[in-house]
Length: 332
Image (cartoon, rainbow, N blue to C red):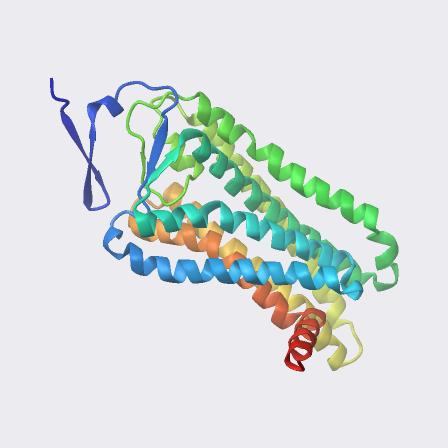
């Protein structure tokens, strides 16, 4: 007997799958990622800027790690946290970009169930880690500007190591229930994910079970962590700005503010698109699906690309080291 075909509409394009995919399967063998639904005809063109952003993020973050490792004067808390940020950005961009480009270039949509949950875990845990790193960097700037004489005694290497470990453990532990819960759900509707990567809510929405636990836990963690981190950063920079305006000379104020401006730019580039993507996914039912998916991609791709650029341009020690490196190579 021939299997009946079911028509699924995603965006404006039809997708067909057999009714064998609608029967109950606790763990589907594969999911199908659609890329950017509704913009399939332009996937090749979209892949060009995405590929450029990925290359720039890889080169830029590796350059940051190389420069900090090679320059002994940069072996201090601010640059240790910057190296953590570079590693986090490398993991984030590499978690999604290769698969996304394979969808755009080769129409390779299939991803195994386990690989999808693994990608989901890496994406959400490392975005949480990145947020924690921004809090640590704000703390470092607060101590360096408000208590400069005590900076080396407060943020010692063991203290920096403990802060770094706490940031990593927080991200890893708080996100762990996401794949654990998602694996336990039965999936009987479809295995098509209208997204370009395995995002948590996009996966659990496919389950034919009550997903309130996953939904409320995800919302609570995201809301509480974002509020806590943003509040901590805001308090730190409020104190920093008060200290800057108390400096006696205009040159000193400008120099100190310039040091902090790069941190503020990176923080805003991370939180603003992330907040927009999060609110759109939860409450933006009237927002076009392709626009939402594009913003979700930009949120995870732009920050890893611009972070090393901003720090390379705005941080004098890194900028000088890069210029010395190129001038040394040019002398041969």
